[in-house]
Amino acid sequence: MSTLIGIDLGTTNSCVATMRGSDTVIIPSSTGARTTPSIVAFAPSGERLVGQVAKNQAITNSTRTITSIKRKMGSDTKIKIDNRKFTPQEISAMILTQLKKDAESFLGETVKDAVITVPAYFTDSQRQATKDAGRIAGLNVIRIINEPTAAALAYGLDRQEPQKIMVYDLGGGTFDVSILDISNGVIEVLATSGNNFLGGDDFDQVVMQYLLEEFRKQYRFSLESDPTAMQRIKEAAEAAKIELSNYQKTDVMLPFIAQGKEGPINFQVTLTRHEFNQMTKHLVEKTKAPIMQAIKDAGIQVTDINKVLMVGGSTRIPAVTELVTSITKKQPFKGINPDECVALGAAIQSGVLAGTITDLLLLDVTPLSLGIETVGNHFAKVIGRNTSIPIRKSQIFTTNAPYQSSVIIHVLQGENERANANKELGKFILRGIRRAPAGVPQIEVTFTIDVNGIVNVHAKDLDTGKEQDITVEASTNLSEAEIQNAMRDEREYEVKEEVRKELFQIKQNALNLVEQAKAKMKNDKTTKKQIKPVMATLQKALKSDNKIDIEVATKELEETLAIV
Ligand code: AMP
Figure 1 (spheres, rainbow, N blue to C red):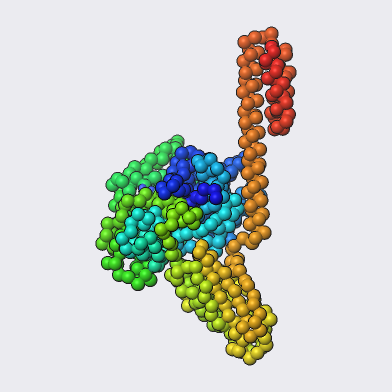
Figure 2: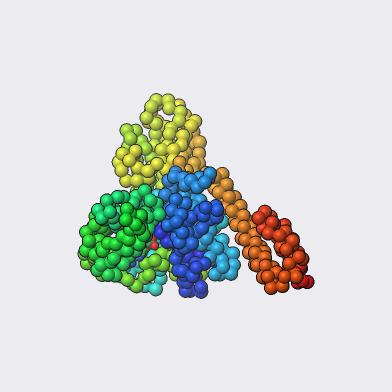
């Protein structure tokens, strides 16, 4: 088996780790960093940029730079670049392809299998989308695990005393809180709760609005129609937020942010931690209800919590730590690097699956209830939230009209009594039911949730014995054909990328040679007659972008230079 990797596919940053013997190691990115920005950009030339290089050009190429794609996973959003529309799965696959490449160059071997983490609160379609992104990137996703579970794995391996742990995970775009029970190598997620649309990005937005407002007050015009200025304000807002985690005040300085009536404007504002805390208080407070919900769902009291783990970059915000401390009356545990522990946990899980770690068993739960719609817009739950997975559960349903020969099975995920207030996972029709009075046919609906938290639904008419297997495919999920197409596109892109890189190198060599030829002609005028026409041929070939022509002309010029 080739080496397995664990991937934390984050909203803002991603991280990869692997096992070396019994130790976990973080795999550095191609730029030597321990995390990779989850950013994809398309250069004006069409070239694809991923990670730090994409982040570096975000200001000047903001309309072709894609950030926080994780927030769109499981939705039917499309990202239009030039004439192509990309799904969130395809964009995520581009990040995964980069992480895979980095791992391959670090390990010196082909990487095939990976464990990928997702927020505990991710719905089925978001999990499925993540798995599909892995496939598109050429990875065999052997397991999807919840991020807090992964964090606890990174922590729990060498801690054997029984304990209840709260994992508070506030990243770039998502928040979740989980209550876990750890004892003798068994990590059980008792409950999870959270908010898929809350994270560091929201804090950035608040600071950004503040900066824009300050600018408007000072200069009486708005920066909002200038994408470059907006991108700079966004970056400055994040930098200010990060600085305020360590200092009581920060100076935001943006030279030449815009052109005013009296010349370029150098925008400057001071922001204190107190002001920052006031303006972001509502965001910190928003994490309170999910904490209480998770504690309640776990069937424990706040006082039962032995340790609190903080995961995700945004937990470095002091007000966040203060809130968690005030609720739990515990100082959050800081022994784990919040940026890396999820990937490390994923690597540990990959070690469990590869059989290199044997003293650990992971029990996970489903974060949301599953069921179907019944008469009167009612949601009939078949599997309750926080049930341990994998699980298979059946329930009998019947018809509500006389002589009904088919039923619509509308599969939903959520907690609301009203069917239409929940997330639709899929809809299918079971036909061929024996004609009978209402309430007589017995239709058995079986839900299966696999170890990855991915759902399958089967329906069976118990009267006729007719069985039908139905795989739930949410409307936002990619079909097999679409995945295959995306995989093919990705491979084609890789091949094109190789060709482009090769051509770039050949052209680079040719250009160097042209420079050498020019120098030679300058130093020794007598050679000009022989060199000039050969050099001109190469320059013409360079304009054509034709690889063979360039190679032939390069060789010719090399030979000419060697003999003159
Ligand atoms: P993650 O998704 O876990 O990588 O978290 C990324 C988020 O953490 C981004 O919104 C960052 O701006 C934020 N972040 C990173 N470091 C800090 C810090 N020192 N203070 C506040 N937020 C931070």
